[in-house]
Image (tube, rainbow, N blue to C red; front, side, top):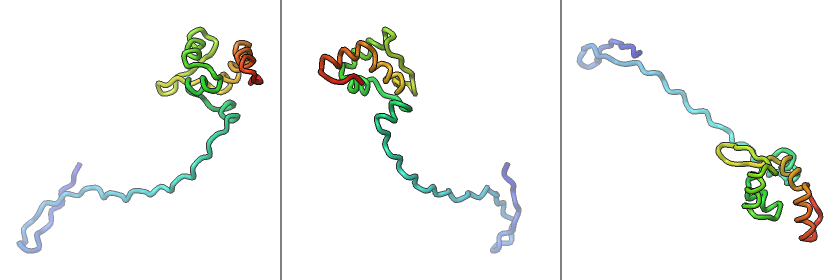
Length: 112
């Protein structure tokens, strides 16, 4: 609701209608945040999440293999904002399964 205030025009001496609008407050200036350090792989495996291409890269297999394992229930994922993510503890469990240990053995690597 706008209040009307009657005042007189100083030159003509006639009343002039003025509207009183709320006074705009100055915007608060935010201090820049200190940048966060990136998480290490160990921290992400404990608390983070991974995209499907990241999982494929870590397991050294194809994205289609990861998608197949998701469909067949060998790996579980969650939706976050419309994107599919694999949680770190689930990835740790998946990498230690017999199937992935055999893959690593074929490449001559230590299992994760």
